[in-house]
Length: 457
Image 1 (cartoon, rainbow, N blue to C red):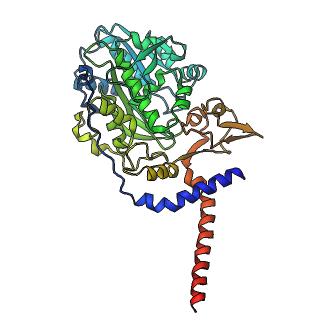
Image 2: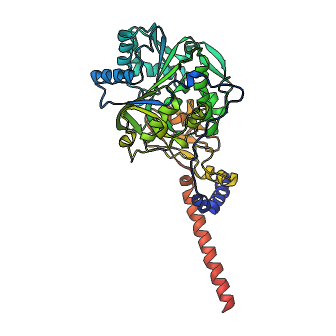
Image 3: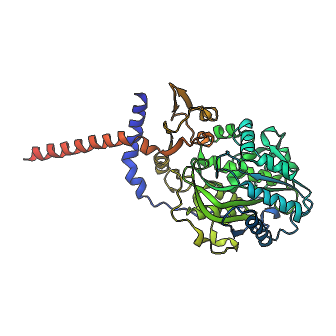
Protein backbone atom coordinates (compact mmCIF):
# COMPACT_ATOMS: atom_id res chain seq x y z
CA UNK A 1 0.00 0.00 0.00
CA UNK A 2 2.83 2.38 0.87
CA UNK A 3 4.52 1.65 -2.48
CA UNK A 4 1.29 2.48 -4.30
CA UNK A 5 1.06 5.79 -2.45
CA UNK A 6 4.63 6.59 -3.49
CA UNK A 7 3.87 5.66 -7.07
CA UNK A 8 0.65 7.73 -6.95
CA UNK A 9 2.56 10.88 -6.02
CA UNK A 10 5.34 10.23 -8.53
CA UNK A 11 2.97 9.49 -11.38
CA UNK A 12 0.88 12.58 -10.70
CA UNK A 13 3.97 14.76 -10.99
CA UNK A 14 5.16 12.88 -14.06
CA UNK A 15 1.78 13.02 -15.76
CA UNK A 16 1.33 16.75 -15.19
CA UNK A 17 4.58 17.62 -16.90
CA UNK A 18 4.99 14.76 -19.37
CA UNK A 19 3.87 16.74 -22.38
CA UNK A 20 5.93 19.73 -21.27
CA UNK A 21 9.00 17.51 -21.12
CA UNK A 22 8.58 15.91 -24.53
CA UNK A 23 7.96 19.29 -26.15
CA UNK A 24 11.27 20.69 -24.89
CA UNK A 25 13.84 21.08 -27.63
CA UNK A 26 16.44 18.51 -26.57
CA UNK A 27 19.82 19.01 -28.16
CA UNK A 28 23.22 17.45 -27.67
CA UNK A 29 26.01 20.01 -27.49
CA UNK A 30 29.44 19.34 -28.85
CA UNK A 31 31.94 19.21 -26.01
CA UNK A 32 34.54 21.92 -26.07
CA UNK A 33 38.07 21.07 -25.04
CA UNK A 34 38.69 21.95 -21.41
CA UNK A 35 41.50 24.29 -20.51
CA UNK A 36 43.84 22.62 -18.09
CA UNK A 37 45.02 25.41 -15.84
CA UNK A 38 48.80 25.81 -15.53
CA UNK A 39 49.39 22.47 -17.24
CA UNK A 40 50.11 21.32 -20.76
CA UNK A 41 48.33 18.26 -22.08
CA UNK A 42 50.96 15.51 -22.21
CA UNK A 43 52.09 14.40 -25.66
CA UNK A 44 50.82 10.86 -25.02
CA UNK A 45 47.23 12.15 -25.32
CA UNK A 46 48.01 13.84 -28.64
CA UNK A 47 49.67 10.88 -30.35
CA UNK A 48 47.30 9.85 -33.19
CA UNK A 49 44.40 10.81 -30.93
CA UNK A 50 42.09 11.50 -33.90
CA UNK A 51 43.03 8.33 -35.76
CA UNK A 52 40.74 5.30 -35.80
CA UNK A 53 41.47 2.28 -37.98
CA UNK A 54 38.48 0.34 -39.32
CA UNK A 55 39.02 -3.00 -41.03
CA UNK A 56 36.42 -5.39 -42.42
CA UNK A 57 36.26 -8.87 -40.90
CA UNK A 58 33.30 -11.09 -41.73
CA UNK A 59 34.02 -14.07 -39.47
CA UNK A 60 36.37 -15.52 -36.87
CA UNK A 61 38.36 -17.66 -39.27
CA UNK A 62 41.95 -17.54 -37.88
CA UNK A 63 43.51 -16.65 -41.23
CA UNK A 64 41.04 -13.80 -41.81
CA UNK A 65 41.64 -12.50 -38.28
CA UNK A 66 45.40 -12.57 -38.83
CA UNK A 67 45.13 -10.57 -42.06
CA UNK A 68 42.80 -8.02 -40.42
CA UNK A 69 45.16 -7.56 -37.45
CA UNK A 70 48.16 -7.10 -39.76
CA UNK A 71 46.17 -4.47 -41.68
CA UNK A 72 45.45 -2.59 -38.44
CA UNK A 73 49.14 -2.69 -37.52
CA UNK A 74 49.93 -1.14 -40.91
CA UNK A 75 47.23 1.54 -40.70
CA UNK A 76 48.23 2.68 -37.21
CA UNK A 77 51.97 2.38 -38.01
CA UNK A 78 52.55 -0.11 -35.20
CA UNK A 79 55.36 -2.12 -36.83
CA UNK A 80 57.87 -1.11 -34.13
CA UNK A 81 55.43 -0.04 -31.44
CA UNK A 82 55.45 -3.36 -29.54
CA UNK A 83 59.21 -3.86 -29.45
CA UNK A 84 60.81 -4.34 -26.03
CA UNK A 85 57.50 -3.85 -24.27
CA UNK A 86 55.78 -5.82 -21.55
CA UNK A 87 52.27 -6.10 -23.00
CA UNK A 88 49.05 -6.92 -21.14
CA UNK A 89 45.90 -7.83 -23.06
CA UNK A 90 42.67 -6.75 -21.34
CA UNK A 91 39.74 -8.63 -22.97
CA UNK A 92 36.12 -8.60 -21.85
CA UNK A 93 35.35 -11.85 -20.02
CA UNK A 94 32.09 -10.77 -18.44
CA UNK A 95 30.53 -14.23 -18.63
CA UNK A 96 30.96 -17.55 -20.44
CA UNK A 97 27.79 -16.88 -22.43
CA UNK A 98 28.25 -16.99 -26.20
CA UNK A 99 29.01 -13.55 -27.70
CA UNK A 100 29.36 -12.02 -24.22
CA UNK A 101 33.17 -12.21 -24.20
CA UNK A 102 36.04 -11.32 -26.52
CA UNK A 103 36.48 -14.23 -28.96
CA UNK A 104 39.28 -16.63 -28.11
CA UNK A 105 40.23 -16.81 -31.81
CA UNK A 106 40.94 -13.06 -31.85
CA UNK A 107 43.01 -13.21 -28.66
CA UNK A 108 44.97 -16.23 -29.88
CA UNK A 109 45.85 -14.64 -33.24
CA UNK A 110 46.90 -11.39 -31.56
CA UNK A 111 49.14 -13.28 -29.12
CA UNK A 112 50.76 -15.19 -32.00
CA UNK A 113 51.42 -12.00 -33.97
CA UNK A 114 52.98 -10.36 -30.91
CA UNK A 115 55.11 -13.45 -30.27
CA UNK A 116 56.21 -14.15 -33.83
CA UNK A 117 56.20 -10.80 -35.66
CA UNK A 118 57.34 -8.33 -32.98
CA UNK A 119 60.05 -8.09 -30.37
CA UNK A 120 57.62 -7.86 -27.48
CA UNK A 121 59.38 -8.59 -24.21
CA UNK A 122 56.49 -10.20 -22.34
CA UNK A 123 52.81 -10.95 -23.03
CA UNK A 124 50.07 -11.42 -20.43
CA UNK A 125 46.27 -11.60 -20.39
CA UNK A 126 44.19 -10.30 -17.49
CA UNK A 127 40.64 -9.45 -16.45
CA UNK A 128 38.17 -9.50 -13.58
CA UNK A 129 34.39 -9.72 -13.68
CA UNK A 130 31.98 -9.57 -10.75
CA UNK A 131 33.90 -11.66 -8.22
CA UNK A 132 37.04 -13.76 -7.97
CA UNK A 133 35.05 -17.00 -8.29
CA UNK A 134 32.95 -15.71 -11.18
CA UNK A 135 36.11 -14.64 -13.02
CA UNK A 136 37.78 -18.04 -12.55
CA UNK A 137 34.64 -19.78 -13.79
CA UNK A 138 34.57 -17.60 -16.92
CA UNK A 139 38.28 -18.17 -17.56
CA UNK A 140 37.67 -21.90 -17.58
CA UNK A 141 34.40 -21.99 -19.53
CA UNK A 142 35.55 -19.57 -22.22
CA UNK A 143 38.70 -21.64 -22.88
CA UNK A 144 40.98 -18.63 -22.29
CA UNK A 145 42.84 -20.50 -19.56
CA UNK A 146 43.83 -23.38 -21.79
CA UNK A 147 44.58 -20.95 -24.65
CA UNK A 148 47.03 -18.99 -22.50
CA UNK A 149 48.66 -22.21 -21.30
CA UNK A 150 49.06 -23.41 -24.88
CA UNK A 151 50.58 -20.08 -25.96
CA UNK A 152 52.84 -19.83 -22.92
CA UNK A 153 51.46 -16.52 -21.64
CA UNK A 154 50.40 -15.62 -18.12
CA UNK A 155 46.67 -15.36 -17.31
CA UNK A 156 45.83 -12.97 -14.46
CA UNK A 157 42.69 -12.78 -12.36
CA UNK A 158 42.85 -9.17 -11.17
CA UNK A 159 41.00 -10.07 -7.98
CA UNK A 160 44.17 -11.90 -6.97
CA UNK A 161 46.46 -8.97 -7.79
CA UNK A 162 48.25 -6.58 -5.49
CA UNK A 163 46.68 -3.12 -5.71
CA UNK A 164 48.58 0.14 -6.16
CA UNK A 165 47.02 3.55 -5.52
CA UNK A 166 47.33 5.89 -8.51
CA UNK A 167 46.60 9.58 -7.98
CA UNK A 168 45.36 11.55 -10.99
CA UNK A 169 47.28 14.71 -11.80
CA UNK A 170 47.20 15.56 -15.48
CA UNK A 171 44.50 15.74 -16.71
CA UNK A 172 42.80 16.13 -13.38
CA UNK A 173 40.11 13.77 -12.12
CA UNK A 174 36.36 14.37 -12.31
CA UNK A 175 35.05 11.86 -9.77
CA UNK A 176 37.83 9.65 -8.33
CA UNK A 177 41.17 11.26 -7.48
CA UNK A 178 42.67 7.91 -6.45
CA UNK A 179 42.20 4.75 -8.51
CA UNK A 180 43.55 1.42 -7.26
CA UNK A 181 45.03 -0.52 -10.16
CA UNK A 182 46.51 -4.04 -10.31
CA UNK A 183 50.29 -4.05 -10.00
CA UNK A 184 50.50 -5.85 -13.35
CA UNK A 185 48.99 -2.76 -15.02
CA UNK A 186 51.59 -0.54 -13.39
CA UNK A 187 54.41 -2.84 -14.46
CA UNK A 188 53.27 -3.21 -18.08
CA UNK A 189 54.49 -0.87 -20.81
CA UNK A 190 51.41 -1.31 -23.00
CA UNK A 191 47.79 -2.25 -22.35
CA UNK A 192 45.88 -3.59 -25.36
CA UNK A 193 42.22 -3.07 -24.50
CA UNK A 194 40.06 -5.73 -26.21
CA UNK A 195 36.37 -4.96 -25.63
CA UNK A 196 33.45 -6.40 -27.55
CA UNK A 197 30.94 -4.12 -29.25
CA UNK A 198 27.86 -4.54 -27.06
CA UNK A 199 24.87 -2.81 -25.61
CA UNK A 200 24.52 -2.48 -21.84
CA UNK A 201 21.12 -2.53 -20.15
CA UNK A 202 22.39 -0.26 -17.39
CA UNK A 203 24.53 2.18 -19.39
CA UNK A 204 23.35 1.78 -23.02
CA UNK A 205 26.78 0.96 -24.45
CA UNK A 206 29.93 -0.83 -23.40
CA UNK A 207 33.14 -0.48 -25.38
CA UNK A 208 36.66 0.87 -24.97
CA UNK A 209 36.12 3.01 -21.86
CA UNK A 210 33.70 0.72 -20.02
CA UNK A 211 35.96 -2.31 -20.55
CA UNK A 212 38.62 -0.75 -18.29
CA UNK A 213 36.21 -1.13 -15.36
CA UNK A 214 37.49 -4.72 -15.28
CA UNK A 215 40.78 -3.43 -13.87
CA UNK A 216 39.17 -2.59 -10.53
CA UNK A 217 38.86 -4.95 -7.60
CA UNK A 218 36.24 -2.83 -5.82
CA UNK A 219 33.52 -2.80 -8.47
CA UNK A 220 30.64 -3.37 -6.06
CA UNK A 221 31.74 -0.45 -3.93
CA UNK A 222 32.08 1.77 -7.01
CA UNK A 223 28.51 0.96 -8.01
CA UNK A 224 27.26 1.79 -4.50
CA UNK A 225 29.32 4.99 -4.34
CA UNK A 226 28.41 6.28 -7.79
CA UNK A 227 24.70 5.50 -8.06
CA UNK A 228 24.19 8.43 -10.41
CA UNK A 229 24.78 7.19 -13.96
CA UNK A 230 26.51 10.38 -15.06
CA UNK A 231 28.97 10.23 -12.16
CA UNK A 232 29.58 6.54 -12.80
CA UNK A 233 30.54 7.23 -16.40
CA UNK A 234 32.92 10.00 -15.34
CA UNK A 235 34.50 7.53 -12.94
CA UNK A 236 35.01 5.13 -15.86
CA UNK A 237 36.86 7.91 -17.67
CA UNK A 238 39.01 8.46 -14.58
CA UNK A 239 40.14 4.82 -14.76
CA UNK A 240 41.54 5.39 -18.24
CA UNK A 241 43.46 8.45 -17.07
CA UNK A 242 44.77 6.52 -14.06
CA UNK A 243 46.25 3.91 -16.41
CA UNK A 244 47.93 6.64 -18.43
CA UNK A 245 49.13 8.26 -15.19
CA UNK A 246 51.41 5.23 -14.75
CA UNK A 247 52.91 5.90 -18.18
CA UNK A 248 56.17 7.84 -18.16
CA UNK A 249 56.70 7.97 -21.94
CA UNK A 250 55.45 10.31 -24.65
CA UNK A 251 53.53 7.51 -26.36
CA UNK A 252 50.13 6.21 -25.20
CA UNK A 253 50.12 3.26 -22.81
CA UNK A 254 46.61 2.18 -23.81
CA UNK A 255 45.58 0.98 -27.23
CA UNK A 256 42.07 -0.29 -28.01
CA UNK A 257 40.89 -2.94 -30.45
CA UNK A 258 37.11 -3.47 -30.46
CA UNK A 259 35.65 -6.70 -31.77
CA UNK A 260 32.71 -5.57 -33.88
CA UNK A 261 32.55 -8.66 -36.06
CA UNK A 262 29.53 -10.07 -34.24
CA UNK A 263 28.20 -7.37 -31.90
CA UNK A 264 25.48 -7.72 -29.26
CA UNK A 265 22.22 -5.79 -29.38
CA UNK A 266 19.21 -5.71 -27.08
CA UNK A 267 19.66 -6.94 -23.53
CA UNK A 268 23.44 -6.61 -23.35
CA UNK A 269 26.04 -7.03 -22.03
CA UNK A 270 25.23 -10.70 -21.46
CA UNK A 271 21.76 -11.74 -22.60
CA UNK A 272 21.46 -9.76 -25.84
CA UNK A 273 21.26 -11.10 -29.37
CA UNK A 274 24.11 -11.32 -31.87
CA UNK A 275 24.18 -8.71 -34.61
CA UNK A 276 26.71 -8.81 -37.40
CA UNK A 277 28.62 -5.58 -38.01
CA UNK A 278 31.70 -7.16 -39.61
CA UNK A 279 34.41 -4.76 -38.41
CA UNK A 280 37.45 -4.43 -36.18
CA UNK A 281 37.89 -0.91 -34.77
CA UNK A 282 41.22 0.25 -33.33
CA UNK A 283 42.88 3.40 -32.04
CA UNK A 284 44.73 5.03 -29.15
CA UNK A 285 42.12 7.47 -27.82
CA UNK A 286 39.30 5.37 -26.31
CA UNK A 287 36.81 8.20 -26.79
CA UNK A 288 37.55 8.27 -30.53
CA UNK A 289 37.18 4.49 -30.78
CA UNK A 290 33.90 4.56 -28.82
CA UNK A 291 32.61 7.39 -31.00
CA UNK A 292 32.90 5.05 -33.96
CA UNK A 293 31.54 2.05 -32.04
CA UNK A 294 28.44 3.80 -30.76
CA UNK A 295 27.83 5.51 -34.11
CA UNK A 296 27.75 2.07 -35.74
CA UNK A 297 24.89 1.25 -33.34
CA UNK A 298 23.11 4.30 -34.78
CA UNK A 299 23.70 6.18 -31.55
CA UNK A 300 24.86 9.74 -30.83
CA UNK A 301 28.23 9.70 -28.97
CA UNK A 302 27.36 13.05 -27.39
CA UNK A 303 24.68 11.28 -25.37
CA UNK A 304 27.18 9.25 -23.31
CA UNK A 305 29.10 10.97 -20.53
CA UNK A 306 31.92 8.39 -20.54
CA UNK A 307 32.82 9.36 -24.10
CA UNK A 308 32.53 13.10 -23.60
CA UNK A 309 34.43 12.97 -20.30
CA UNK A 310 37.48 11.39 -21.95
CA UNK A 311 37.11 13.51 -25.09
CA UNK A 312 37.08 16.89 -23.39
CA UNK A 313 40.08 16.01 -21.24
CA UNK A 314 42.06 14.97 -24.30
CA UNK A 315 40.87 18.00 -26.28
CA UNK A 316 39.03 15.84 -28.80
CA UNK A 317 35.78 17.15 -30.36
CA UNK A 318 32.89 14.73 -30.00
CA UNK A 319 32.31 14.83 -33.72
CA UNK A 320 32.97 11.78 -35.87
CA UNK A 321 33.63 14.02 -38.88
CA UNK A 322 36.68 15.36 -37.02
CA UNK A 323 38.26 11.91 -36.76
CA UNK A 324 40.89 10.61 -39.14
CA UNK A 325 39.36 7.34 -40.28
CA UNK A 326 41.89 4.86 -41.64
CA UNK A 327 40.98 1.82 -43.74
CA UNK A 328 37.22 1.70 -44.29
CA UNK A 329 36.80 5.46 -44.41
CA UNK A 330 33.04 5.67 -44.95
CA UNK A 331 31.76 4.84 -41.46
CA UNK A 332 28.19 5.70 -42.34
CA UNK A 333 27.75 2.84 -44.79
CA UNK A 334 28.32 0.39 -41.89
CA UNK A 335 25.80 1.97 -39.50
CA UNK A 336 23.12 -0.53 -38.45
CA UNK A 337 20.03 1.66 -38.64
CA UNK A 338 17.77 -0.69 -36.68
CA UNK A 339 20.33 -1.67 -34.03
CA UNK A 340 18.33 -2.46 -30.88
CA UNK A 341 19.54 -0.45 -27.88
CA UNK A 342 18.33 -0.92 -24.27
CA UNK A 343 15.62 1.12 -22.57
CA UNK A 344 18.04 3.58 -20.99
CA UNK A 345 18.27 7.22 -21.89
CA UNK A 346 19.39 10.66 -20.70
CA UNK A 347 22.94 9.60 -19.72
CA UNK A 348 24.27 13.01 -20.64
CA UNK A 349 24.23 15.92 -18.23
CA UNK A 350 23.15 18.56 -20.73
CA UNK A 351 20.42 16.63 -22.57
CA UNK A 352 17.75 18.93 -21.14
CA UNK A 353 19.16 22.40 -20.86
CA UNK A 354 18.32 25.53 -18.94
CA UNK A 355 15.86 23.85 -16.58
CA UNK A 356 16.79 21.88 -13.50
CA UNK A 357 13.09 21.26 -12.91
CA UNK A 358 12.54 19.62 -16.29
CA UNK A 359 15.77 17.70 -15.89
CA UNK A 360 14.47 16.16 -12.65
CA UNK A 361 11.20 15.24 -14.30
CA UNK A 362 12.95 13.65 -17.26
CA UNK A 363 15.18 11.71 -14.90
CA UNK A 364 12.12 10.17 -13.27
CA UNK A 365 10.38 9.52 -16.57
CA UNK A 366 13.41 7.81 -18.11
CA UNK A 367 14.38 5.86 -15.00
CA UNK A 368 14.71 2.14 -15.67
CA UNK A 369 13.11 -0.64 -13.72
CA UNK A 370 14.55 -4.14 -13.27
CA UNK A 371 12.22 -6.97 -14.25
CA UNK A 372 12.67 -10.68 -13.42
CA UNK A 373 11.19 -13.16 -15.88
CA UNK A 374 9.75 -15.88 -13.62
CA UNK A 375 9.61 -18.39 -16.47
CA UNK A 376 13.33 -18.06 -17.20
CA UNK A 377 14.53 -17.69 -13.60
CA UNK A 378 16.22 -20.86 -12.27
CA UNK A 379 16.55 -19.49 -8.69
CA UNK A 380 20.36 -19.74 -8.70
CA UNK A 381 20.46 -16.47 -6.69
CA UNK A 382 23.47 -15.13 -8.62
CA UNK A 383 21.61 -11.82 -8.94
CA UNK A 384 21.08 -11.71 -5.18
CA UNK A 385 24.77 -12.40 -4.50
CA UNK A 386 26.02 -9.80 -6.98
CA UNK A 387 23.65 -6.90 -6.29
CA UNK A 388 25.78 -4.05 -4.83
CA UNK A 389 22.69 -2.35 -3.35
CA UNK A 390 21.27 -5.56 -1.83
CA UNK A 391 18.02 -4.82 -3.65
CA UNK A 392 17.45 -8.43 -4.76
CA UNK A 393 16.07 -11.11 -2.48
CA UNK A 394 14.49 -14.54 -2.65
CA UNK A 395 11.14 -15.12 -1.01
CA UNK A 396 8.83 -18.12 -1.45
CA UNK A 397 10.78 -19.44 -4.43
CA UNK A 398 10.68 -16.12 -6.27
CA UNK A 399 13.26 -13.38 -6.79
CA UNK A 400 12.02 -9.92 -5.82
CA UNK A 401 13.45 -6.48 -6.58
CA UNK A 402 13.23 -3.64 -4.07
CA UNK A 403 12.90 -0.76 -6.52
CA UNK A 404 13.53 1.79 -3.80
CA UNK A 405 16.97 0.29 -3.14
CA UNK A 406 17.83 -0.50 -6.78
CA UNK A 407 20.61 1.68 -8.23
CA UNK A 408 20.04 0.49 -11.83
CA UNK A 409 23.62 -0.78 -12.28
CA UNK A 410 22.41 -4.01 -13.93
CA UNK A 411 24.93 -6.22 -12.09
CA UNK A 412 22.01 -8.59 -11.61
CA UNK A 413 21.59 -8.97 -15.35
CA UNK A 414 25.33 -9.38 -15.87
CA UNK A 415 25.43 -12.25 -13.40
CA UNK A 416 22.22 -14.03 -14.48
CA UNK A 417 23.18 -17.22 -16.37
CA UNK A 418 19.78 -17.64 -18.00
CA UNK A 419 18.94 -14.15 -19.29
CA UNK A 420 16.01 -13.86 -16.90
CA UNK A 421 16.57 -10.20 -16.03
CA UNK A 422 15.68 -7.27 -18.24
CA UNK A 423 14.97 -3.56 -17.98
CA UNK A 424 12.04 -1.36 -18.87
CA UNK A 425 11.25 2.28 -18.27
CA UNK A 426 9.88 3.06 -14.82
CA UNK A 427 6.96 4.72 -16.59
CA UNK A 428 5.84 1.35 -17.99
CA UNK A 429 6.03 -0.29 -14.56
CA UNK A 430 3.48 2.18 -13.22
CA UNK A 431 1.50 2.43 -16.46
CA UNK A 432 -1.61 0.61 -15.13
CA UNK A 433 -1.87 3.07 -12.26
CA UNK A 434 -1.23 5.94 -14.67
CA UNK A 435 -4.09 4.80 -16.93
CA UNK A 436 -6.45 4.56 -13.93
CA UNK A 437 -5.51 8.09 -12.86
CA UNK A 438 -5.98 9.37 -16.40
CA UNK A 439 -9.41 7.73 -16.49
CA UNK A 440 -10.40 9.32 -13.17
CA UNK A 441 -9.05 12.66 -14.36
CA UNK A 442 -11.00 12.46 -17.60
CA UNK A 443 -14.17 11.56 -15.69
CA UNK A 444 -13.71 14.53 -13.32
CA UNK A 445 -13.12 16.93 -16.21
CA UNK A 446 -16.23 15.69 -18.04
CA UNK A 447 -18.27 15.93 -14.82
CA UNK A 448 -16.95 19.45 -14.21
CA UNK A 449 -17.80 20.58 -17.75
CA UNK A 450 -21.32 19.10 -17.49
CA UNK A 451 -21.85 20.79 -14.11
CA UNK A 452 -20.76 24.18 -15.46
CA UNK A 453 -23.01 23.85 -18.54
CA UNK A 454 -25.95 22.77 -16.34
CA UNK A 455 -25.56 25.89 -14.15
CA UNK A 456 -25.81 28.14 -17.21
CA UNK A 457 -28.85 26.41 -18.63
